[in-house]
Length: 75
Image (cartoon, rainbow, N blue to C red; front, side, top):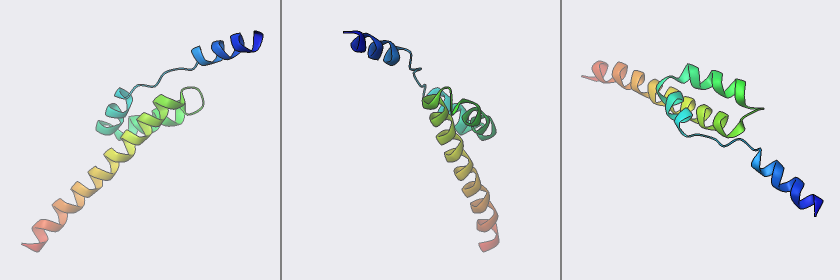
């Protein structure tokens, strides 16, 4: 009976993640990267969302820069 109570307490104390940190990381990738590095040990779900958002935001930003630099050169 005690092990069941201990398991329930540990599950309830697990912090929930928020996808809004991913949205913030997408629009401001530097903030997403910093949040990922700060939260990866204490709040892993929110850290993962912020890190993925930052990664996608940086990749799309890089693609946008490449496309805007290459297209005018081709015309």
